[in-house]
Structure formats: structure tokens, C-alpha cells
Image (cartoon, rainbow, N blue to C red):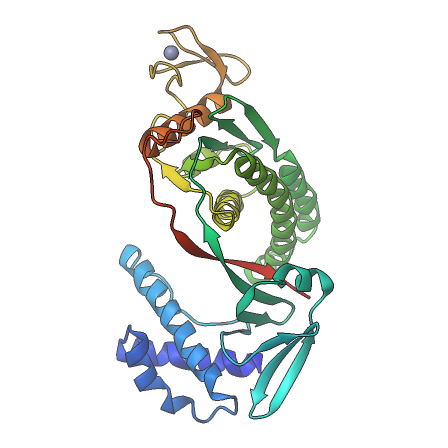
Length: 361
Ligand SMILES: [Zn+2]
């Protein structure tokens, strides 16, 4: 079934590329009849067409930036559907043909998580079942902000109430070192083998780092939720700062892993914040790491990652300074309800939907 879906998806992509269609409607008109040879319930055909539309849209966007980008092709079996399934009594029932179903056991943790929510879509791969569920969320009027500055080894959070927390991520760096040793034992000089091994260990490494980031992002969002604060982060996460020499990895690999873990932390914080109805804003990164967070002058680096302001004499840890600058930029842009409870920049609290996805068994 997964394999059939993958083939349908690739058929749709091929048709979309050949006919140069972009909209869901025109792709449906062109492709639907050509999928008649597949022996699967018809709503999977619609799901394949809609998935292909998304892939084609991303491809067009990428091609505008880079004309040499490869044409899309689905290699891994993966199926997404928003129709026909039922989750009941600890089981997911997924129709394959008319009146035929496959059943997948849903573990208790997952059952507890989706309890009270509506499951909107199901994604199935060879090893993982993901359920996406939606909830009505009431926006929280921010009473302040937390500013987050991320480094390779840690990230620093500065809040409106002047507290500062640092979250250690060096465990994630250590995880990398362990997997590096394993990988270096494979010496075969074949690009394909190297890539495969690198992918396999890369996957484990990603899962390990993901876990560490989940712990950290969870406690940050709990702090923000308790204080009813919005979250401010840098718009561009300073990928350039990551390309440092003298590290063990190849440039390509290091850059890819680091920028992935940057983006992953941002993604986790953003969706967890939205799930709680907290405001998330991005500020321009210009000067956040070099300007004084008190007077705005350019600072001078001192020993031990400290900075000194020649104008006002402020001496501060550079990460704390950056987090405070991000906090200040966020506060300036959006305004907050001050501590007396008076709204400086009132924003209408609207009910918004946010989808959160999780993994089941
Ligand atoms: Zn200063």
C-alpha cells in the first residue's frame, strides 16, 4: 500500500512537471484518470494528488532560488491521508479497498495524547505512524517577552522580569563525538557507501539531538506559559557563526548538522509556543551580538566570552547580552501589557487553530 502510494505520488509529480500545472484543481483534472490503474481506495488518489501539488509548489519555489535544483522524486514509501480512517478503542483502522481495512494498534501514551482532540490526518511510513490533531487555541495576551539567543553549546533566555536562564546543549555536541568515532571506522572509499553510513548514523544522531532539544524547548515554553510571556527569536539564526574551522567534521557535514539543529530548536519552540497560544515573533539579527543591551553602543570583547561597553562601562556575558537585545527588539516591536495590567498595544485575542503532530506506535 505504501509502495503503491509512492508510485502514484511519483506519477502525479511527473504529470505535473510535464504539463506544468501548479494548482490542485488542474492537477486533479490531468492526473486523476491516469491513476485508475492503481488498486487502492479512491481517496488515496486524491491525497496523492494533493501531496504532489505541495511537492511541486516547493520545487518551483526552490527552483527560483537555484535553477539547478533536482526534480522531485519520492524515494521513501510514505502515505498521508485525511479521509477514511478511524481511531477507536486503541486501534487505527485504515481502509485499503472498499470494505477492507488494516488495523494498527495505538499505544496508551498516544491514546492519552489525542484524547479530547480531533485527529485530522494520518501519516504512515515503514516504521512510524504519525497522527496530526487540531485544537482550538485562545491567544495569550503577552505580559512580557522572553528573548532567546542560540549558540552551538547552549542557548540563553532573557525575560522581561530580568531573569536569565542558560540551557546547556553540550550533551548534543557530545552525542556527535560518539557517533563520529563509529563512523570513522568505515574506511571504504566509495561515495555511495560513505553516504549511506553517514545517513544511518546521521539519523541516530538527529534523534538523540532531537530528544535533548525537546527537553530544553519544553522547559522554556513552560516558563513562558507560567509568566504569560511571548517568545522572541532571531529571524536568521546566524548560520554563518556556525562555520567555524578546527572542528572534526567535514565542512559540509558540520554545516548541515548544525544548521539542522538550529532550525530544529526554532521549530520546536515555535510549535510548542503556538500550541499554548503564546505569541512568537522574529527580530532582525543585526547587532544583537555586538551592541550594548543598555546603551546600544558597539561593545569590545573581553576574556571568557565577556563584552565590555566603552560608553557606559557595562560588562556582560555575550550570550546574555544577545538574549537581552533580542528581548528588547521583540518588546519594542510588539509592546506588552505592563505589570500594572494596562495594555500598551492591545491586540485582539482571536481563536486560532494550531496543529501539533506526534508519533505513535
Ligand atoms: Zn553601553
